[in-house]
Length: 172
Image (tube, rainbow, N blue to C red; front, side, top):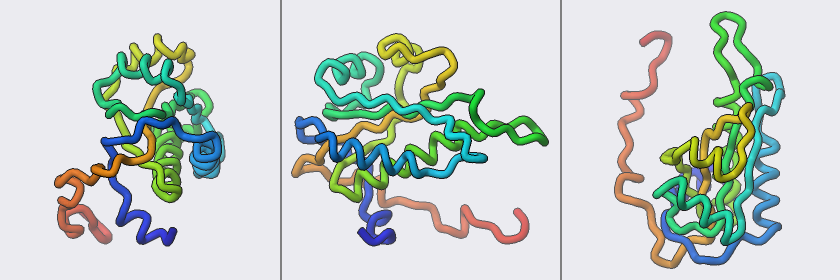
């Protein structure tokens, strides 16, 4: 799909068909995340694929924002593996994981899979339910599936601030 069309048409899907994603779709989405740039190419992301009834049932105990999706991917980062800015110690790993999740979300739309980026989840419950190792930080949950026929963007999707409110040149 042409990039401008892709970013214009993509929206957060919150109404899904019940079928789990086929392996081919999961693999394409994961490959897009794998191609994402990371600070100094450290690749601190770790992705947990949830694509069974059992795993999605466990996920529902960790977030109310599952939207009955049949599939999900939890994007985590390992802070110890990310690049660290020498001036102030800022870590690239959370940003890297967000870039990975964005690539995955865009590829999902590109292949006809709906996605919604969810940050409203209980990290402790996710950690316990899915045995997330101590060194990994859950950052983003992508709930995924084929959109239902009635799926459509929320009205809020079309409300954006004027670009002049968010872009500055040379100085703030």
